[in-house]
Image (cartoon, rainbow, N blue to C red; front, side, top):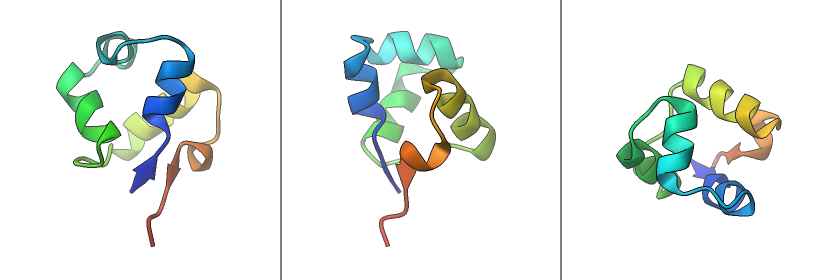
Length: 64
């Protein structure tokens, strides 16, 4: 699954650690999501969407 997490994070000048703290996950989890190695759970995806005040579809997209 593709995502815009890195771009959205950079627009706010947040480090991976900053985003991780806001989401209550590890920095490694943020890195894995950004690089496409890990797809977030649905609750985490909703939490990310709320944090950035965007619909999930504007952050995550199916690669197919």
